[in-house]
Image 1: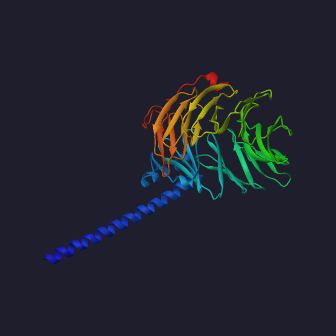
Image 2: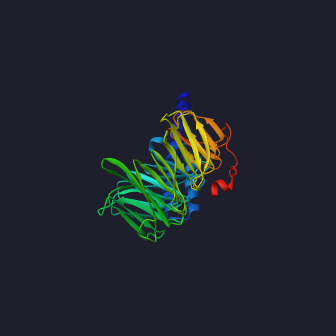
Image 3: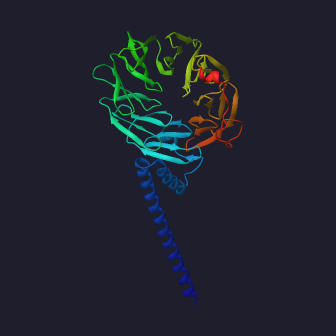
Length: 409
């Protein structure tokens, strides 16, 4: 009897093990089905259905909410598309909403991917190769092949795309496409390489920064084109400066950022250079509403910095001393986030600290939108508030009101 009881227990254990294996196999099969369905539907079906299945799959996998598990080694870019996070990695582009839920994950096979986002649209290109594509959080709109190796690019609010590539007619070339993939403008730069491109919201104006050498010295040039004319409507030579970015603020207004230069150009083409002779331009960020934030290192010191904020017209809004090393910065045009080894600090446009939070020292990148600031750590993305000394979430939409004259001029 004792042996029978023992044998019966053994049989129950085996049966239980078989059930566990069978259940695990079923769950795995379901997850595979969900994953495949989510991928196909997010590419080819209405956004709502794709999101629903993708979210269900994420819930079953446990990847739902912050902290969002991800390896920083795989992340090439962390940014915002409206209230959603945009994460570019080696294999695809993930869109994560403000609750930490993965909305989509569009795979790519690009070896050196770069991404440029405006509003709901993103341009993804393979630097040094030929492919680029335009996508939203819900679908890949199109993918296209360039004749020459790609360098950089940009996308406008209305879906126009500017692509810079190498050329057999010169050193580099610019091609501009409308939202229907028709080429509407092209320009060849004979001697210099294009390093920065920016296209206006309506796709009419395109700003280009190029770098070359003259008698062994570095030289940069900036051009502003109107797609309706072949010749540049603005042209600036910048000897001794390595241009890092040129952005269209509004109309023909520009901001030019170089290693030793911050300059604003007004509608008439008049250039106003900001004096940075005693400091080094170490970081900058230009938000979608054309607020320019610049970090200057005092005498090239990593721990003694100045945060400068400028309006769309080039007017200085604020200046604040920063006494910590800055690893990354981001601005949504209402707040500026500065990331260091031990803390994330948020400022308003007037240089006042709106929030500060002590964090682990493995932080890598940051970004923010409205009430939320996001920090990429070695193994996860965490969400904090832009206000106070707390990581508690705040009500969405409760953003600080900024003086319309400051943002809109």
